[in-house]
Image (cartoon, rainbow, N blue to C red; front, side, top):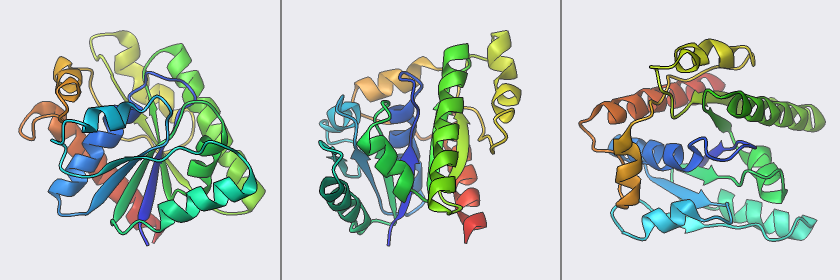
Length: 216
């Protein structure tokens, strides 16, 4: 069965898709099989993948209705994937796909920028995951908060790790705001493997694999 990693945040514009695609690329570089499922109606991941240069499948996987039959079919199709890792780019709104992603993920990454609204969205997302765990009486999914699109020249950017640590969940190494990240995705590619951004996504992959290993 695939290891399922959800990327969820109630606030948009925090780098969910960017994180999903570049983390998937790093896992693939390490010899893992990987797929990204785009559950967001905005379909940013699918649009970027149209270039055919990512090197792994990106599949639209929308959950149109929230009835029990639709959710069950959606979940079964995710769990039936043959890849070692399946990353789900969840929609920002707390709808059926958001809830289903949290329900089946082994680990949920919660990207957050340094702004007050970004951190508030991260806190809402973490609270939603905790409510799900209490309701289902399970310890899954684990949570890893990801400082994303961080500008270390600002005071908020320098303090963001400490700010997010106040959510009392593990915090991953920060992903910096760099033009190369956006430019690469605009060209249908992930960041170059030999650059500083790639090193940051590699550190994120280390943190993800450590969290997943700790759960075994």
